[in-house]
Amino acid sequence: MLVMGGIIGSGIFVTPAEVARHVDTEFLVVGVWVLGGLVALAAAFVYAELAARRPDVGGQYAYLRDAYGPMPAFLYGWALLLVIQSGGMAAVAITFARYFGNLVQLPISESAVAVCVLGGLTLINCLGVRSGSNVQSGLMVLKILAIAALVLVGLYLAPAVAPQPDVAGPGSISTLAAIGAALTPVMFSYGGWQTSSFVAGEMRNPQRDLARGLLLGVAGVIILYTAVAFVCVQALGPVGLAASRTPATDVMRLALGDRGATLIAIGIAISALGFLSQGMLTAPRVYFAMAEDGLFFRSVARVNPKSRVPVVAIVLQGVAAAAIALSGTFGQILSYVVSVDFIFFGLTGAALFIFRRRHPDQPVSFKVPLHPLTTGLFVAACAVTVIATVWNNLTNSLVGYAILLAGVPACLYWQRKSRNPA
Image 1 (cartoon, rainbow, N blue to C red):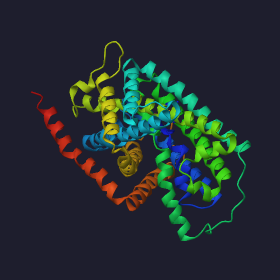
Image 2: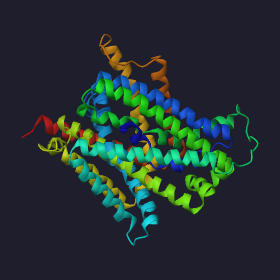
Image 3: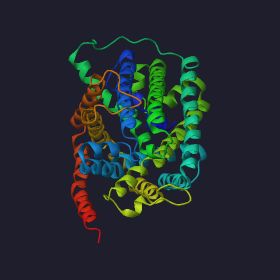
């Protein structure tokens, strides 16, 4: 539930349209999601072995720290707080607020609703990891049901559009370029598998359970995403899908009228809430690990004696996401999340080569099949995703990198302070 909840947000209900704007045949619209799923599956293999080798609190932060040292690990946590996690949560909170507002028709601003829901989830997760995980599991079940309803209703009740001829040959250069452009929103939608590793230190048997969860969770998401893409392109056609702003709503309206549109709005709101719940449960453990290493405020590493969770770290995540939601800059931040996030994905994948070379005889409960081919595929896919995103969104990517580089002097400050605690 943690793995799937970290991947599935509200994006899958709208990103099939973005994909269709780049590739214009049914085969390619669905095929790009399968291709992205294979990359995500390779990532699951890599992270499963890393979890077996390094079952530490902080997950990806710990992998980067142990492979490369404190600076890259700190920059990852820095970007997670200021760009990746908080920006994504702010945008999803606003998405929830919009659909919630349409459903209840109350005179409340979107920003106010977003801050309230972030505050409520912060409070729930401060009560303990069990309360947070129970809420997350419940929301994930509802989210899966909403996606399953979209798929089944779209398959059996929505009229299929007439077949349309292929525009470009499958081997043309233009088609390959279009596939590369379509992979950016696809890989953004598949991102999030790594957040489950943040809570490895609070699992009873992370070497076994986290590896299983990663593989089963990512496989489940691939099935759901591919099914949604197939249903959308079958009901709307490539041209109609590309023109749609809300493809899931359009499919449900075709099948069930306005009642279907209302039902999927509820599903999207629940899906957004589930993503926020998962982020609030997992990401604060990175800031906790940074503080334990002396690279952040020491108070962030304090664990509440009753709830046994890092309350300050959880509140910090909630406040950061709420601030971005209020500022109204979340849309811009989302556009450069991918260019920053996939740099660290690639570095984390490459860390497996380092750990295998350093500890060739370490017994582990799971090893990546077909390594180094599988691991190399994942690292190469991350590099291609970064290049494609920078190529298509240069200005916003540069803003993301500027925030990332601002973490270098911050890291040097904390390193100096940890050496001289007085």
